[in-house]
Amino acid sequence: MFMENITEQFNAVALEYDWVTTLLEGKPDYLLDNLPDRRVSALDIGCGGGNTCIFLSSYFQHVTGIDLSVDFLQIAKDKVEKEDLQNVELLQDDFLTAVFEKQFDFIFSRTTFHHLDIPEALEKCKKLLKPGGILFVMDNVSEKPTPSTWTYVVGAYLDFPRHWKRFGLKNARRIFKHSTSKSWLNHLATDRYLSKKGYEEIYGKLLPGCKLIQDGWNMKVIWHHKPIDG
Image 1 (cartoon, rainbow, N blue to C red):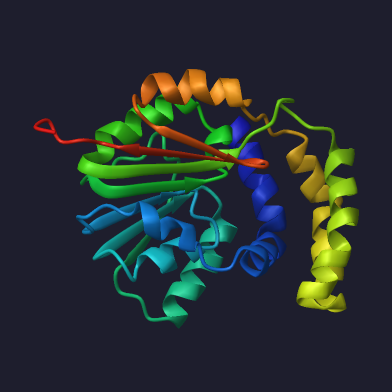
Image 2 (image 1 turned 90 degrees about the horizontal axis):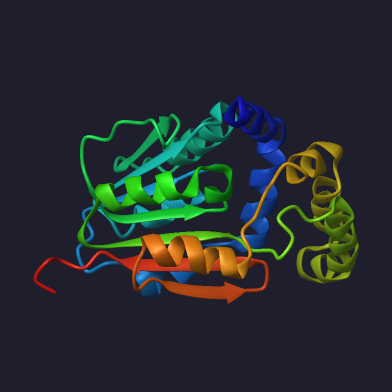
């Protein structure tokens, strides 16, 4: 039931969320320094509108994106078809119960793991990752598991001048409208984030030797699945 509610929430904001994140984030070039030497297959967990899948398609022979939201996947499919990408596969399924017929050289996930049973998700990722592969999880970090919605509203007001200068008034207004919309704030009110200590305790235990890199509200977790001989 929990994941069904989350999916419904994302379906309600899919178009605007994808537009905003595409504008604000651009290409995920930060991935380039963390790609494995072997680049046959990649998996994007919670692929949303497909931007990361499309980006990875230039570096891997085959890319799989998985998401529960039908609306998000339709957005992703439209983008993939528009660019005529033959090496991107999109799946509508729950990652924790989905059956994969292969392993992957690179597994990525952005702002999705806080919706999952994290230990269960990490154990599954470890089984799906080929020796020598890399797992890259990017998610929110907060000392308060569920920040007050006013925090996001204040943040939207503070960001507005910067967005206006960077993207123009029309786009800044659209970003602000999404960021302060009732549907989006209702979704954020259901989120539960890990603290820095929580990341160290959970990810550090299940992914020995992983790197934890905090950048404001974001935490990057990077783990190399070393081959048995090294």
